[in-house]
Amino acid sequence: MRNADVLRFARDAAAGYPLRTSLSVLAMAIGVAAVVVLTALGDGARRYVVNQFSSLGSNLVIVLPGRSATGGFSPANALTTTPRDLTVDDAFALTRLPSVRRVAPLTAGNSEINANGRLREVVVAGTSSTYIDIRSFKMAAGRFLPAADWNRGAPVAVIGSKIQEEIFGGRSAVGELIRLGDRRLRIVGVLKSVGQGLGMNTDEVVFVPVGVAQSLFNTNTLFRVLIEARSRDELEAVKREVMAALKARHGGEEDITVITQDAVLATFDRLLRALTAAVAGIAAISLAVAGILVMNVMLVAVTQRTAEIGLLKALGARAATIRDAFLAEAAMLSLVGALTGYGLGLFGAFVLRQIYPVFPAYPPDWAVVAALGTALGTGLLFGIMPARRAARLDPVQALMKH
Amino acid sequence: MSVIQLAGIERVFHLGDSTVHALTHLDVGIDAGEYVAIMGPSGSGKSTLLNLLGLLDRPNAGSYHLEGRDVTTLTPDEQAAVRSRRIGFVFQSFHLVPRLTAAENIGLPMMLAGIPAAERAQRVTQALNDFGLAPRADHRPDQLSGGQRQRVAIARATIMQPAVLLADEPTGNLDRATGDDVIHLLETLNGRGMTLIIVTHDQKIGSRARRQLLMEDGALKSDSARPSVAT
Ligand SMILES: Nc1ncnc2c1ncn2[C@@H]1O[C@H](COP(=O)(O)OP(=O)(O)O)[C@@H](O)[C@H]1O
Ligand SMILES: [Mg+2]
Image (tube, rainbow over all chains, first blue to last red):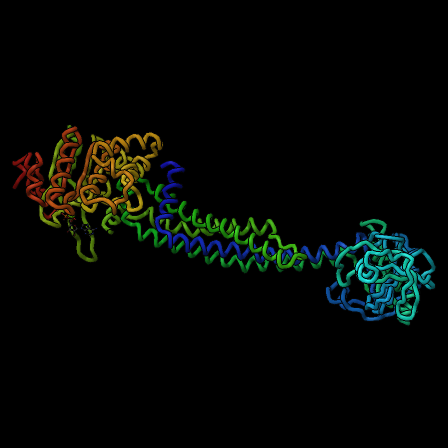
């Protein structure tokens, strides 16, 4: 029997029993769709987090006060703000380290901005002129904070694009005087919109010199020190040097944590990949169930069509031909189910992206390949037993079944 | 020249503890182009014999030569090839594939034999015309009368131009008139040289054949061609 005829015969046989066929196609489709949608969700979460971290800037090393409990990075202490003594002088000392290109101190707090007759709660970030280069931000208007002694600081401010919009509307804010807490500051620049950054929305931040922020919040500690390494290869050297320098300055105490963006990213990446794989594995169980259903459907088919199998043998069909025809039918059920499920899954991911536009819910390629492969594989695997049973039927016995 | 030569055929079935000798000491020769009726009471081994002749079953002992070739020693695939090219079957209950049209049912043996679709279509059209089934080409079996179904089955059995046509009670499910039509059709095919072997318990049909084999308890009781055998 020619291959094209085997396929046509199998197709007609499947079409001849619409209920049976649509049930197994549906089961397979649900399995594949589940894998596609769930991995799209998992991988979307991973990409979302990775994008957020990537937007921090490259070659970035972050120093935070407080010693991490494990010595390594855990997501929890990236979010803690335990105030330990990390001072502007500490930060300034780091500028002299050989592998360090730039340093920016960072202190933060909430305050009220009063300008143009409007009042608004804002996040105030005290930093230095180097901050914009480390974070690779762009100016929409004016300049960033001027280079100056970190301990003093001019009464100037740079505002995020959203603040510009809400307080000044379309009018240029550069040169305007604002009141921030009990300070009067002049706006020297407006940042270009960068959207949501991890933890804080830069578009809603007012940047002031670190000295101004510290006196505003009446503190002399820093929230973070951001460091840019000279190159990617020097990230580890920076970590080492920073650790050593601050240990020396803190009387031999290792009371700080140094993290690299790479480490943070790698941890999240690993975590969320594992999560996606686990979710895919769970969804794949439904594929195995679908495979078992296909097997039962094919076993029913063999029983239902016993007389037909006997006839085919009487008409000269070889055992292999009958096996192939039933195997082709199982493969078709799986293939149609898998493709339908793939379509459904893509549609599901599309709907997810419509509902959560910030969430890049695309199924990863490996998941799509694995889902389609597993669907076809289980379909064929579970199709073998019924197909062989059909091929082995005794023709005389089979012909008597009617 | 004998197209079929059976010698010392035995067929034994085991049912639990009991054994059934469905065929015993069977020696029969059938010449090419013969018209043979196999008759006998129910359970006498007629169907078992026909299944052996059609290579659907193997004897426990004895030899079977088809067109001079020992076919009992062939592999299953070789036997399938012989069934495909040299043997045609007609069954009491027609055995049409319900989801296929009349034309597709007739073309089935050619499809199984791997004949290209174009040649198949041409030969099916020819057969539909020859058997008066052209208007029914696209009908499914459940849209056909019993007589039409058996004609489709006969067209299918002969589409590969076999040497031997085996029919097991071909009129068993048909009324008298339709049954006679079917017998006439088979006789026409025999008239063109095809060896025809019909199993029947209908005396009237059996007596039309040029040779009658009478079976009893798995043995050949009489053979009209060799009256001396009858004992
Ligand atoms: N597959 C089988 N298993 C056991 N016994 C069988 C089988 N096929 C046929 N027989 C027995 O063999 C004998 C001959 O059967 P069969 O050839 O069908 O008779 P007929 O066609 O003449 O009515 C019967 O006794 C029947 O019960
Ligand atoms: Mg019988």
